[in-house]
Amino acid sequence: MHKVHKGLTADGAGLAGDRVVAQGSAARVLVAATARALRGEDCADLGHTGPASRFPGAPEPVRRAAVSRAAGRVALTVDQVGEVDAARVARWFVDQYPRRSYPGVLIGSPHGAAAHLAVALGVPWLPAGFEMTAHWSDGAVDRPEAALEHGGALAERLLAANPDVHLRQVHCPASRGPLTGVTVSLAARWRALPAAYAQFLTDRLNAGAPVLLVRDARTWPVSERGPGHSFQVGCPASGLDPVDFHPDSHALRQVLRAVGGNAAQWAPPEVSAPSGDAEHGMESGFELAARDYAARHGHPLHQVLVPRPASLSAGVADLYRRWLRAAGKTGDRLVVECGRLLDPWQVVRAGLVPYWCENATRRSVDEAEWWLAGSEAFSSVDVLPEPPGMRSPALAGLPQWLAVAGFGRRRRALDRTSARGYPVTSVPTRRATEVLRAQPYDLPAPPPLGAAEALSVLRDSGGHQGLLVS
Image 1: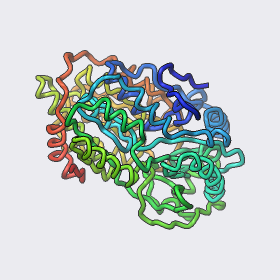
Image 2: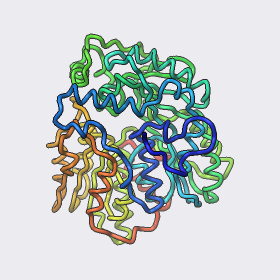
Image 3: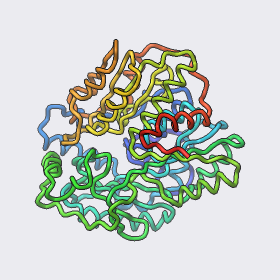
């Protein structure tokens, strides 16, 4: 059983936030990493190696069975879904941050560069939602209609106790692999500002401190399945396009074959919204509530609209380079992080420029290469590719990751532990800490950035990539 850290569980009924929020999910990892950085700590205690890492040479059926068993041990049961209290989850998030006043706050969609931006500003990052996984005992990766039926029953139980959230169910074998056949993935998005967030802002924000909303603007075909519940087949993080989840898609056949499914059985439900917000979007009610709170309490609110993850990653990397150079540092050493492999405190401690790839797909790595090709050269480039634990036609190969490292003038390093067994093994978040601890110290850290300066740089460097800062 996953250890519940003392002091991080809120009082009240329902399951503890530590039990509800999916292990390894973006919101969970980013809050933990940001909170540690604001306490002056790294991520050495974060993450557990997945079962795939213990079977690097095992046949695929053995590996899939191990992954499925591990997922079953941590997923919510049907009864536990009814015990979820989204208000308690919000309290669990805010309770992880040091109890002091802050010059601002970032709220919104999960993004590794947003965590780095928060640390540079010296402010917390809070998610606009969270992910859960729940048991699906008779599931199958190639039966999205059955997944929807099972998820609908779970959604009814959860929404009865949490009318303030919207549940987006995601069935994506291309990003979740065999887990898609034994669990359902539910992304809960708050429809209003949680009471714990409002109290946190009231108690911890300095007078006139800005509120920055970071919104993932990606879209995806969606099926609306009733009040508070929607469903999508596939997701942007898969590295594939919506058309690739059509029954006659060659990419889909490859994916299903890799995870033990059969494309002949694939029959996705009818789409009701061809271009709705993807799972990490922000509910309009949440945004309106945040704007209303900011206006009533004298906090300027700015929105950062992110059309694709690379636009914010590039903007924050450029921002860090200027920030470091303004403090008399070189700003010439880059670390390319991926997925859960990040450590904001070690990045600041070593005076590194961080560029975050959402995942190990070719699309993510292509955009990192394009940004590097158009940037002033770095003297060193360290690359931390996160193995996704499965094979997919959308994944970048190790030669492409090596090409990213090759942009370094003097040092070009690809983490061997992450590369060993790539892409079918897994490594914990603390692997990034282990790698970055080997970097030389470059202290003292620069003084925290001001929000006005940061937003100005993001407008300048991110505007041509579609980043919209208002």
